[in-house]
Length: 194
Image (cartoon, rainbow, N blue to C red):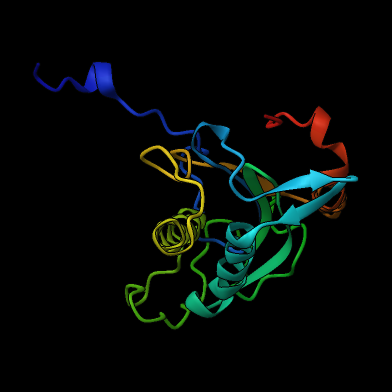
């Protein structure tokens, strides 16, 4: 069968024409493939990380050294997904920088110094950061399967793509932070509950 872009077109879930490398806060959710509970379990409303879950936390925290100009805010590992807030720092205030009427939106931003493997003069996008996170954790998880008998996964550790939400103001940030912190206590009502 011949390839047809009309049939096999992958529709983007990102905002059209939005620059995901510009300064701001981004809430991301990344799910395991088929929502397999591979990262630990919930007991008494608390997330109990297994070795794979602890590895995911460590690789998340490593992203701040891998990419110049990013901050990592609230995060949580759940049995079959991960929530985190990524902050892209490009000399703009923390919260409220993404409002549509912001004067600097679309203006050139100062260049960041690239890390090894990061193209010169190109600020990482949220997709670059999440892609690196998924790739690194997948490779380490495969190593854990081979060396430590972690549960196997089917073809991919993470689902294709990820959910993101641009945090536009302080009120939104506080709601999302609270959601992340209380997510384990609400596991049985969670959209991703398996």
